[in-house]
Length: 300
Image 1 (cartoon, rainbow, N blue to C red):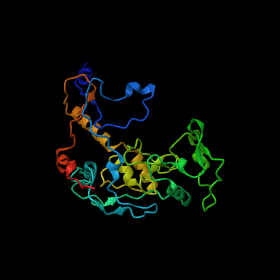
Image 2 (tube, helix red, strand yellow):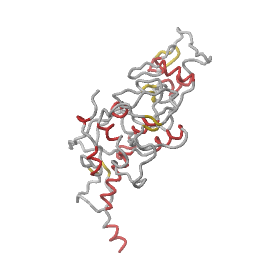
Image 3 (cartoon, rainbow, N blue to C red):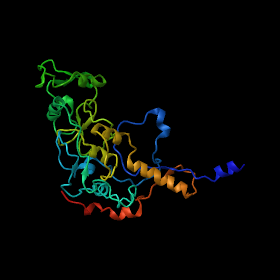
Image 4 (cartoon, rainbow, N blue to C red):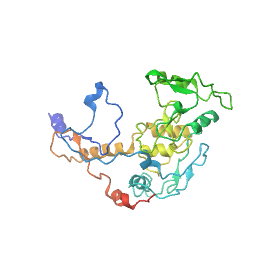
């Protein structure tokens, strides 16, 4: 009886609803349609614009495939509200995981280095056009046949690299039965990145920088997961990619934590709705004061 009374008094956390628009790709599998978190059709939510790649990384300095120094200086001011926010210090974020101490390297740009591609892959990446939608299909010797299947063009002699290996590898043609656009795929500025992966290997995923001949850096991936710039990753570069890719995105964790905090404090709106509409700014008070509005960040 006492246990049941205790359970009846509990306030369970509600699931936070989305705060931003999203670029829809495909749809939810039928088996998971009841697990989709979304607003009802009769609701008219006020969602912020989708955060695209340009919003997240356009202020970061240019680096090469062989960038070795993982502690750099910022060269320009933030260009978007997101960039202004993501650059806040540990203190401005009200993060006291180091007590009152400043974290290592704080104020510098850390982990802005890419996985160094081998010579063959680097030559392939340099030949991928710097345009939206570019991928291995744009390399010499590839054509798109019936049913959108990539294949070697029999009318063009096979092109080989200095190493003697082919420019277009067999695995790119055969991946997903030739229907995939991901091998050596280039991301673009106006796109959202649907998944931050644990490996920076370009053989089977779109991870090429839109304007540079390299894969996204550890820091660029970390920003896509919402990690503040003061977070410094640890270990060899491949392990740092894994740390970022395996993590729960920081904004998602913050939203879930906000809902959990309300439940812990027994703050409840009295409704049976299992969903929670987050406040316009559900940051801690000190954070909102430190974030500049969009018209106060640097102009192009």
